[in-house]
Image (cartoon, rainbow, N blue to C red; front, top):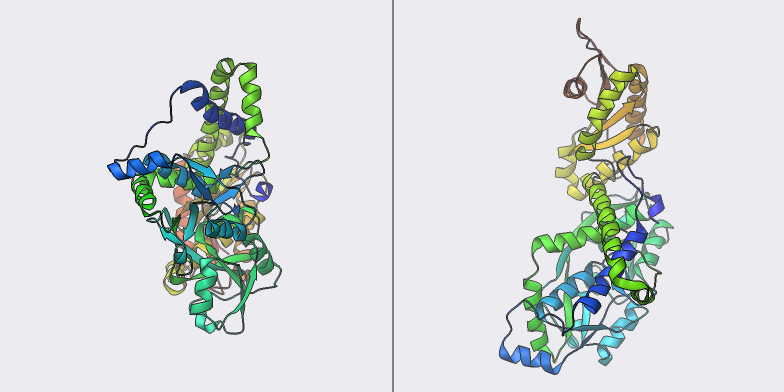
Length: 490
């Protein structure tokens, strides 16, 4: 799945071995460095709450085994994902010791909760049906739900206008419950999991599905569903994801609320970014690895493993810092690092270097008329078309907002002009859906002898401005030299 994601030249190879090594280290540290009981929670508990935890040393919980990137139960029985880390952090802060009850499907998870096999459900929306056997904590995480449709489907502003269309949703979810009640005019198809739901939309077996915004963006990019798009949202259809607690355990709910309240926005954002941007690695039996490492001599390996992990972690952090989260293109930080090197190389070798600067026409009107989700979809679509038009040596960059930039190595002015015109035509001819028609304006400039990078970018920006003043949906090349100035428009 990860192999289908386009990566800019700023990306390096991942280090899954180092990731596995770190997992071992983190699990080894408590076993070898702590001789007493686990560290107490960091929140203040009442006497009654502490007495409850003393009498309940382990709390069982169930999770959705297939809800990536929120939560997944791996083949070796590990609970991983955004929900898993948030739950563990809240529980640790409150001094609650958790034990996972493994289930194979969301239906089995709900059944286990109802029967009392598990005291907690890790991550779910509150609903009237679920309130029959659960009480709920404060939200661990809040996220909007959005419609996902094929590219040709119009933007959805009012679901009441979708009579005769079909929506496919996982069975037993709160969204299914709400959609049946609020929008009976839409035909309902239920399936066992979200993966099947999005596959049915892709295969034209259903018109749409609805998913969390984070999951929608993650799935479309990570699994390569480039014919699908985010097509709108329903007001107040938010995922306010909470921990579900057995109804007779209100004191446990209050204890967990204290742990949830201790999680800072920075901590929550770090957890989200970790799982949205990094694939979950599964299939390695970490327990067996721990035993092998322990037998071989954990004290000797500890320093080596930690050093390897720090190196891999640094690479991953640099990757994240150099990539635009929305489009997957390089970002301005990446360009700032590469650009001086490319300028120096061009001057020393005498080979040409050109820059194309692109701006989406009337983008504010797109946001105002169709909404910011539609605007994001337009930016993603334009970025995809640019990527498809480029050569291996070119670098596409999210310059800022609706502006994109292409750095063209070994490219003289006429070749850069042809590339820019090819991009312009591709955007003009592409059916975006909402809005139906999108155009771009472009400016092209090539490096002078002894010119600095700032000057080259300014001339490309001037050419772009000339395209917009001349009526938009055109390419302007800046032919400035030391003797004078001339601009040509296509």
